[in-house]
Structures are given as C-alpha cells and as structure tokens.
Image (cartoon, rainbow, N blue to C red; front, side, top):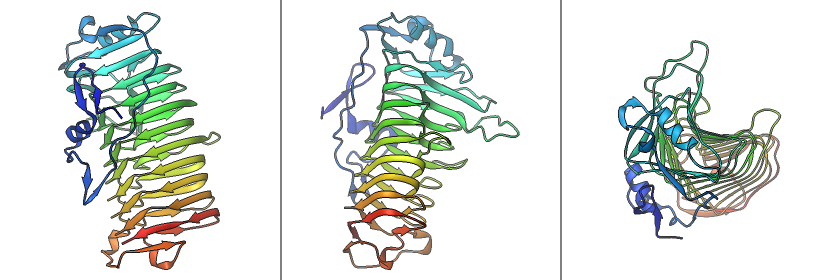
Length: 376
C-alpha cells in the first residue's frame, strides 16, 4: 500500500490521518483495546484525460452563502470528450439537490480536504448532492458532503428517505474514496440501478437518516477501510443495507476492514435475493439492535470480525439463509441491553446455548456452518 494518498490539492496526506481528522479517532483506530488492521487496500484509479478545471474558473464562490450548483456543473460540462479532473478548492459550496451535480464519464471530482459540498434545504422526497447515472470511469475523492436533514421540509405523506449524498445508478468502474458524508435525509451513499465494479474506500458515512450505505440492484461492489455509524431517523437505520428492490438481485459484495457502530438498528443488514457476500476484518459494535442480520440470501462468509457490545444479539442468521460460513470471529458482550455477562474466554466450534447472545440461528436454514470462533 502507498503510505500516502494524493489528496485533492496535490498535497500528500497519510490515509490513516484522513480517518483521524474526520472522526476524531486515534491514528491507530483503536476501539476499546481492539485495533483495526492497517489500511492495506489501494483503490483503482479510473481512466480519464489530463484536463484540469477548477470550479472557481467557472464562477463558484464557496462562501457557504451563494448557490454554487450551476458553476460546478459548468466546470464538469466544460471537460473535453476525453474527460479529466474537476478540482474543488477549500470552502463551503451550497448545492441545490433538486438540480444536483451530474457527474460524467471519464472524470475525477477532486475535493480539497477542506472543501464541503453542502445541501441546501429542500422539500422534495428525492434529491441528491452528487448523481452518477449511466456513466463509467468516475472517481470522487476528498472533502466532505453534508446533507440537510436538520432543516429538511418533509412531504406530509413521505419519509423523504431518498435524499442521498451520492446516488450511483446504472454506472460502472466507479471509485469513491477519502471523504466524509453526513447528515443526509436519506443515505450517505446509495448504489443501484444495475451498477457494477464500484469501490468505496476510506470514507466515513455518519449521522444519515436511512443508511450509511445502501447496496441495492448491483454487482461486484467492494467496501474497504470505512466507517458507517450513527444512522438514525427512518427505517432500516443500518450502517450498510444490502437489499435489492423486489424482482432484482445483488451479488459479489466484499466488505473488509470497516467499522459499523452506533447505528439505530443493525450494523449490516442483508435482505433477500443477495448472494456471494464476504464480511471480513470488520468491527460491529454498539449498534442499537443486531451487529448483522441475514434473510433469504446465499453464500455469505463472515470471517475474522469482532462483534461486541451490540444492544441485541451479535449476529442472527434468519429464515432462508443458505450456504453461509461464520468462522474466526471474536464475539463478546452482545445483548448488552440485558447487562454485561462475565465469562471466561473460550473457543467453540459450532453452536451452543452458551453463545446465544452472540449468534442465533432462526427459521429454516440450509448449510449454515458455524465454524471455530472465539468468545469472551
């Protein structure tokens, strides 16, 4: 792995320092004595041309007062057919999410670490800060996206849960990295519409209303070195929700070295018509219900994670879960709402009532293997 990630302004910033700056966590990412493994993934660089345009060149102000939507869009539209880089200097740029920033193929949206794209208050049920539809070879890197959940004017008959920070639909070869997205009325990031080859790396998605990240109708999704936390406001309220719409499916999802904490429901939810998901080297903790829930899915591999201090059961494999493996994990202090349970650390292969706070097998399951795991 490269020791430094080239940030939006060309300056080198240690990638560990990004999470440190955006969450206030220690540089070692130590959580209660457990440290996440060192960042080891280098996200793919997508194809694009060499042109570079600053949004300031197209009239963006970045003072947190003026609407900069049109200026930023003008910069994107000015790229040549071969694409290139759009640079957003430090500042706060107000975005009209009903118009949204429409990204194009063959581009990098490069934000200075101190650049903020801030959503203006809206009263619509569906809107986005950044929108990627039917595009390819796109990167979004650096800075912050801030939603308008605190000022949103709600439709009287709607939850307005489709107001997202980033919506990726029908797109391929997309990388989202090194940024923070927060306070969205819907999801921090939503991937769907048949998208493929999407990489999420080194982001913090926090205090969004519906999900930190929704993975819906798509395939070949990778999520590394990120935090999904404090989701609250409208169901399902999970860190990540892998849930295709009825009649669609989702497959080939890899989640590694991520933290799922303090979400109002589950750390991760896997719900119907989902296959081939690996969750490894992650921490699921302090969620207000389960750390992980599965339902009508197949090929789920849960390995080498820490699952602890969740308010309800650590992990529940629900009805319709098939061909699933749970091994090499460390679990303790789950079902915390009942109070701490003191026990001598032990290793167990298979399931027993002694671990029912940590793992539950519920309903009709097929080939769900509880391997060797550690408990304390």
